Figure 1 (cartoon, one colour):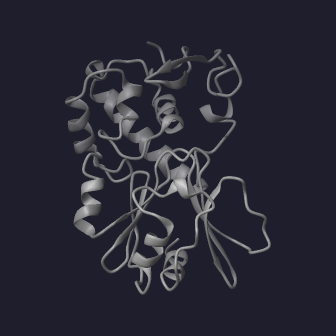
Figure 2 (figure 1 turned 90 degrees about the horizontal axis):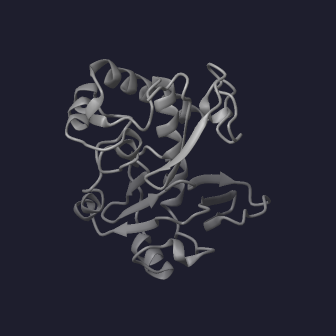
Length: 247
């Protein structure tokens, strides 16, 4: 990713295949603002990739379906490739099916931090002590809290369900009812699930994970064989095992 961004830094960002993916700035404005700038080391916070460019800061939000990847120029565009930058040896493509957030340009680091100010700490970096403290100040169902970006940045629907399943905790549990053992199980499960998901580049669909069975209505739990349950919580389809994640 760093190599791709550093390559991009020497050229203009290409015209988007879907201008609606740009938020608060037009394609020509974006190109003019980045002309002559070189990207510094990028960083991530939750679903944001923050790429400082010696003044302006390019901010890419990947939402539920976004990605940034390098492709051969001979590879046909995907219908969800929203922004494409063409180079002599390939193309850098921003792909996003749902277009929930998109690409922004902050004038400087101060403005970039304001964009991120409502987010909680990054789920991958939060310490156990901070995790416990954040949970202690929350109310509501566990699934709703885990997917609230002001609580932790970066946990989406699949990740939250997978974490609860690995921790053997029902996502409908009230956060206030969790004890120290529950919080420890959740934190450990979150670390494991995030580590494996980062390696895979997604929440992996594995026969031994909830992801390997969640799309089959009332399918068997990969761990205990009990038929899975499903309902909407906080407007998200939530799946769990009533056998090994009791209420």
